Image (tube, rainbow, N blue to C red):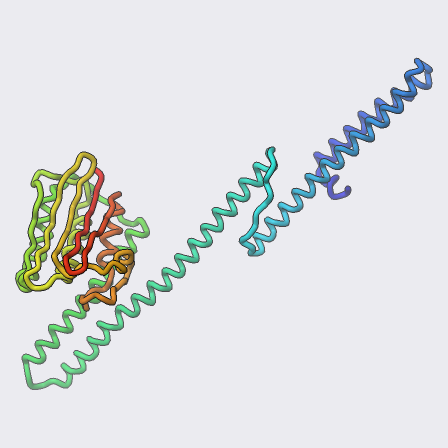
Length: 342
């Protein structure tokens, strides 16, 4: 009773009700004393019964409400103490239960944020581990090459070979760091896309030209196919980066005489760019994982890749509001399809 009356509004309500009941009871007693009529005694009796009944019903109602509030407070305190399985019963109607429903929704949102933070920490831990692993290989190779160079004093051709290998490993480290920086900026929303209407044929040709020397050395061919009038609203530098990663991936997984095709076409509502090759293809069990960072298939023959190119491409495409799909047949080749809304 004391805890219920701690609420000033409830206390005022009870005091007001008692005052009203006291007033009407006093009037009844006065009528009976003045002998206003024979009905004075029944009025007094029923006034007292009515007052007692109202007080009892109000007390029981507020006691029940107090119990509900105490349970809700207990649940909230448990949540603050660390329990994540908190749920306030709100299987009734009224403003109080609406409040409880909103509290439950807030708890669900907070739990989702907690899980997201845990996932982010796990991802960060795994990423740091992956980066450490990726850097160990080229750094170890550089140490070996430098040790051999320090000991080598005679054969210039041997020295040149190890210098070339050292430059290759340094390029690998630089690519890793640059791609990590790009992905981090995209994830953090630090990149402001400078979109303009770009001719697809122009930047496709730019991609082909950047790989022309490698393709020639490896006796592979890069073919462009598409309507030269097709344009796309995009940030040209980033789209070139995305398509270049796909072409590099295709070159890495095609043998001598391989063909890489960059195709594009415009539909009513979107522009589609496809990079396809006739290389080794992707094993079905790897298709689900290929866009994960640092993912390397055990079937991959690419010993130089760092597993970031496809992740970066996906991030760039999605930042442009587009989608990326892959279709691959082992031994027959792979197609990456990029779709952008017009």
